Structure formats: structure tokens, C-alpha cells
Length: 120
Image 1 (cartoon, rainbow, N blue to C red):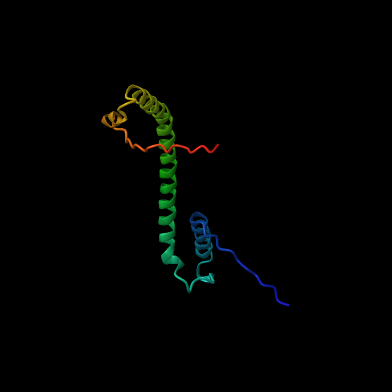
Image 2: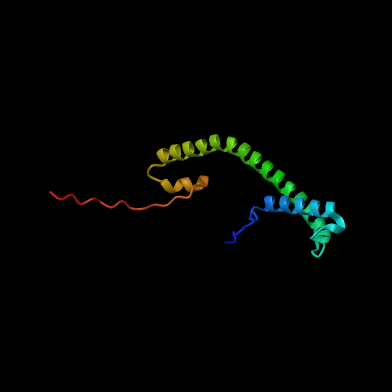
């Protein structure tokens, strides 16, 4: 019985580009003896290198974005607390006029409470 051989090609873009780069390097090393000469590896090698360069740049941007989000989040926590404290204080001050909170930028919605029917 013949064995079934499967060769996996990773769907992860970075892994795919790295594999393509390895294939291109081996193809170049073998030169005229490369079994891949009938394919357009010489043309695509420039695209592979450009894609790897752009991918590295994107990873750097991702790292910088994560840093920026961390810095932002460190600043947001006390601001969130301050906004909640302001809401609570204004709700207490304008207990009978809750729509006044709208003057401070809060979105105010009123809903009537339903009375619970108590069965005896």
C-alpha cells in the first residue's frame, strides 16, 4: 500500500512568507539545476521581500498601537471614576430634576417604575 503524504502550508501570513522566502533562497542556490525553474520564483522573489518588509512594518505599528492603548487606558481609569462621581453628585443635587444632567452632557432617559403586585 502506498502512503499518503501531506505537506502542510501554513495559513498564517508570516509563516507563509517565511516559507516562500526559504523556497526562493533554495531555488536561487540551486540556480540552473533548480526543479522550480519552470515557475516564476525569480519574479516573485521581489514580491516576497517587499511583503516581508511591509509585514515587519505592520508588526511594529501593531506594537506601537498596543503601547498607545496601554498609555491611554492608564489615563482613562481616573477619568472614568471622575465622570461616575460627577454623575452621582449631580443626580443627588438634581434629584427632582434629573434632566438637568443633560446640561452637563449626560444622556438622560426616564423610565417609570412598575409597581409590584403583591399577592397575599
